[in-house]
Length: 607
Image (cartoon, helix red, strand yellow):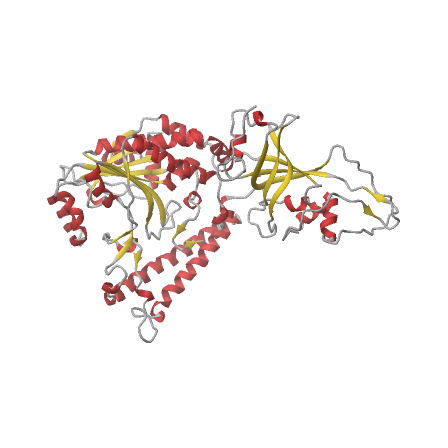
C-alpha cells in the first residue's frame, strides 16, 4: 500500500497529493489523514441502516431541548427538510456552538420516545491545490450538519480514506472521524454562495477570487524561471520607481509626497483642497459610473443601456484627463521638487527595459519579472494600470536572435500550461472558452509566420471585401481589427510582424539603413492579439542622441543610459511579455481584469 504524502509544515494532507495520483487515490485507501479545505457542494442523505419510524400522529409538538442549543438548531439538526428550508430562505449560521453530544431521544408530552433520524452529509471539499474536490462523509452524530452544509464553510477533519464501493465520480472518499475545525459562513452575504457564478459577478470581490487562473499564473511564473535558468540567463531585480520619464508624462504615475506637506497654518503648501476639488468630484463620479457599468454587466441588461453607460464613463474619464492636464500646467511650475522625498520628479516605471540594458551590458543575458504601471485611461478590456511583465535583454544579439528567443519562450510557456494545468484548462473550457486547449496546442505546434510591417499592410490593402474602421496606410498603428484579420483570415496562425515605421516605436529602437523603419517586432496570436513586443536597441551614440533631440526628450534624464553607448557598447536586443495578456489568450477571457487577482484600471480599484 502506498504511503500518503503529508504537507511538510503541518499535519494535513494536500488534496492534490491524494486525487492527483495516477490511480486517483485508490492506492491510499485505508490511510488515516487530516484534510482541510472549503465546502464547494454538499448533499445530505439518511443513513442506510437508519430506522425511520415516524412519531405517533397524536403526539403533541412539545420538544425538550438541551440547554446549550437553541430550539431551531436542534430541530434543523434532526429534520433535514427544515435545514433545506432555512437555506432557501437565507437563514445563515453566524457562530458555531460546541459539538453536540450523541443524539438523544426527543421526549414528547406523553413520554413516548421517538428516535431521531440519523443522516450523513456528503461534502465536496477543495483546498485550492487542484481542480478536483475530495468527498468528505460526515455523520450527524459528530456535528450539527447545518453548520458544515454551506458553500464556503472551511473544515479541518481527520478520518480514513475509503475506496468507493459503488462506481461513480469519486474513486476515494474521506470518512470523517473527528471534526477539528469549522469556519462558518454568513450564507446571506457570502458572494460565492451560489454553486454557479459568472466572472463578472465575482469581480467586485477580488479577495475571494482564486483557483484555476491563479494556479495558471503560478505555473507561468515558474516556467519563466525554468526556461531562462536552463538557457543560462541571470535573474535580476529592477526598480519600480524611476526618474526616467517619457515625452507623454500623462501616461505615467507620478510619485510625490508634496501634497501631504503643510505650512505653518496647516494648509497644503502646494495646492489647496478648493483648487483640487473639481478633479476629485470627477474622479468620484468615475468610481460610481464604473460600479454602474459592472452592475449592468452582471445583470445582463440590454446592450443599449450598457453602451450608454460605457459612453458616459468614457466621457467622465476624458474630462478627468483634461482636468489633470490643466492642473499640471497650472500648478506643476509652483512645485519645488527639491523638497520632495527624492528631491526630484519621480514616476512609477512603465517598463524596466532601459534599466535591464545596463545589466545586459555587464552580464550578457538577463531577465526580470515584476510589476509595471501605466496611467492609461482607455476603456479597453485589454489594458490594466498595473501589470506583471516578463522582460528580457540579450547582449550580442540582433533582431533575428531575439525573435527566435521570444518565439521559443512563448511556446515553452504554452506547453507548460498544457502539461501542468490541463485539469484547470478542462474546467475553464467548460466555463469560459471550449477551444482554449486546442488554441494552445496549435500555438505550440505552429511555425510562426514572419512578415514585415509593409507586407502586413499589403495584405490589408488587398482585402477589398473587408471594411476597416481605421484607414489602411503606411505609418498607422495596426489596430485590433487589423491584427485579427491577419492572424484569423490570412495566416490562421501566430505571426511575427517586424520592421515598423520609426515614428511608431520608442527612441531607443535601432534605426535601419533606410532611415524610415526600425528593428522592432510584435508576436500576434489568434484571439490574444499582441503577446510579445521586442526590438533591437540602438547602440550608436550619434543616432540615439539625434532621436532624443528629435522627440524633444530631456537629454539629461538619459545621460546614464547613454553611458552604455559611450563605454564598451555592444549590439543588444530584448522583449517583454505581459503575464495577464498570456493568461487572457490561454483561457479565452474577454476582460483582462479576470486575469489578475486584484485588477487596477482607470476608475476601478477594489481592495
